[in-house]
Amino acid sequence: MTELLIVALGVVALLVLLVGFKFDGFISLILVAIGVGLAEGLSLAKITTAIYNGIGGQLKSLILILAFGAMLGKMLSDSGAAQRISGTFIKLFGLKNIQWAMLLTAFIVGVTMFFEAGFIVIIPIIYTVAAQTKMSLIHVGLPAVIGLSITHGFLPPHPGPAAVSIAYGASMGKTLLYGLIIAIPIAIVLSWMFEKLPYMKKILGSVPEGLAVPKVLKEEELPGFGVSMLVALLPIILMAISTYADMYMDKKAPVVGVIHFFGDAPIALLVTVLYSAYSLGVARGRMLEDVMKSIGSSVKGIAMIALVIGAGGAFKEVIVSSGVAVVIKNMTQNLSVSPLVLAWCIAAGIRLSVGSATVSVITASGIIAPMIATCGVSPELMVLATSCGSAFTSHVNDAGFWMYKEFFNLSVIDALKTRSVYTTVLGFLGLLGVLALQAFGL
Image 1 (spheres, rainbow, N blue to C red):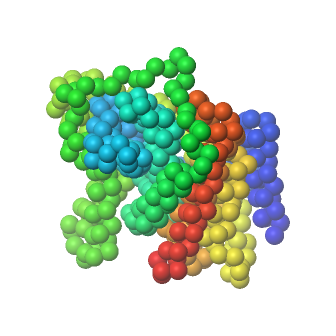
Image 2: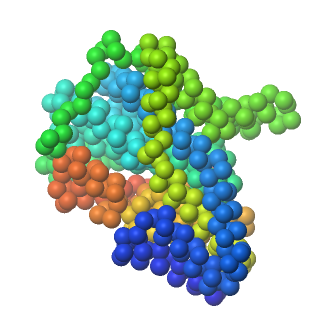
Image 3: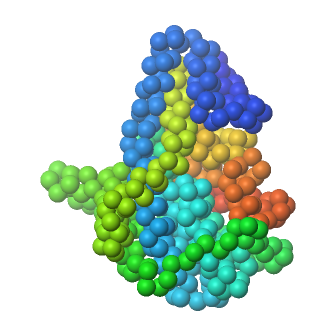
C-alpha cells in the first residue's frame, strides 16, 4: 500500500505543478517521475534507466504516428482536399442538415490529428461555410468540434488512443473497430441534443475581429472528391484490412505478414503521406521540392506534444520499476469495481484537474498499464475507457477550451454551456458504450 500512496502523492504533486505553478507538462512529468522513483527507494541509476526506457518505449512507434499524422493534415489542408470533402458533404446533406456534413468532415479530417491540430485545419472551413450559408458560426461549427473530440476519444490512429494502445499492448485495428461502434451513435446523440437545447438558439458565435474569413480555393483549384476521400481514409482502410486478415485469415500465410506490415499504423500513415504528396501535390502541378517543404514544416507543431507523451512514458516506467505493478495486481484481483470504470475515473479525474487531454491520457495509462495483464478485460476496451475519460469535461484549464472560445468569439459562459457540456456528456456516453461492448462479450 505504501507504493500506491507514493504514486498517489506523485499524481497530486503533478497536479500542483501543472495547475498551481503553471509548470510545463514535460518538465513536470520528468520531475515527478524522479521524485516518485526516489520515494519508492529506487537508486539514481535505476531512475535514469527507467526514464530513458520509458521515453524510448513510449515513442518508438508513436513518434512516427505523430509526425506522419501532422504531414497528412498539412496536405489535406493546403491542397484543398478538406475543403472539397466538406463542400461535397454539404451538397449531399443539404443546408437543412449541414451539421451532419460538418460532423462527418471532422471525423474524416481529424482522425489522424490531435484536437488542436485538427481544429486549426477545420476552422477555415467552418468560417467559410458559415459565411456562404449565412448561418450562425455555432450552428455550423459545433458539430465539427464535437467530431474532433470524438476522434480523440475513440479512433486510432489518432495519437491519443494510439498512445494508450501501445502502452496497453492493444490492437489498434480492433480498437478502431470497437471505437467506431461507440463513436457513431455518440456523435448522432450529441449533435441531436444540441439542436434541442433551448439556450443554443441564443449562442451564435462570430468570426473574431481582425481575423478575416480565410481564402477559399476556387472550384477549379480543388482536387476531386474521390482522391480527397481516398487520401483521408487510406490509413483506416489499410488498418481495417489488417484487422480482417488477423481475424479471418491463416496467420501463417506469407500474404498476412505483408498485410500486417502495411496495416501497421505508422506504415499506413507513411504510405498515405507519400500518396498524398503525389496525388494532392505533384499530380496537380506542384513542384516536389515545394511539397516536401510544406510537409516538413508541419511537424514543428508536434514537438512539445511528443515531449509530453515521452515524459508520460518515463513516469509510467518509474511506476513499473518500483514494483507498483505487483501491488496493483494483488489489489485488483478481488476488486469489486470494474477495471473499465476505474480506468475511466482515473483519466477523467486527471483531465478535470490538469485540463490537458494529452497529459491526462498519458498519465492515466501509466497508472493503469500494470493491471492490464491481470484485470481480465480486453485491452482494446481498456484503451477506450481511458481515452474517453481523458476527453471528459473540458473547461477553463484546458487550452482547447480557450482555442474554441476565441475562434468562435464566445463569452466564457457560452463556451462552458457548449464545449464543457458536450465533453461531459461525451465522457459519460463513452463509458456507457464501453461497458455495453463488454456486456456483449467483446
